[in-house]
Length: 201
Image (cartoon, rainbow, N blue to C red; front, side, top):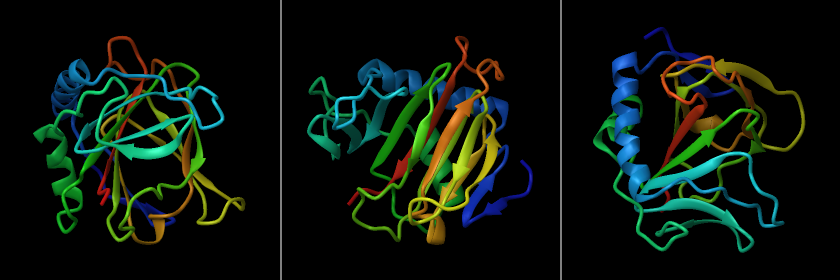
């Protein structure tokens, strides 16, 4: 693990998870996805997103024609599985002062997938951070401002990197412009998994 970087209030922990820890988290995620399979969400306007999605915890974040929201069940009607201990340990290590997360959103990026600039603002308490975990292929993470527009900064996130979005960064716009498909051997079929842990209520 190397020294923490701070850009625009985003605290980046490069290499927080070594290879063995990454493998343990991926194995734990396989159990989550057997219960709550990945699905392709659509925006309220009906446009399919390029990422596939699932979740663990009391809540999952979903989007469909009815809008963006947290829900206590997978689109197939099943409750979300618990957040695995291997993932809870990451939260405890980087934000020990925060309340326990109630949602672990799982986003899978295949070749060509991206995530436009957005704010995480469907939660009730913005004093609680959001923690992002990168697994698999490198992703180009863009960090913006609290208002739309203006200059942005970008950094490549590698497998095992962890980002804490709290304080001034909590409501900054952020997104993933692209991935370097095939840059990691962690996931047999390639691609990038991003986990975001959030306190919802």
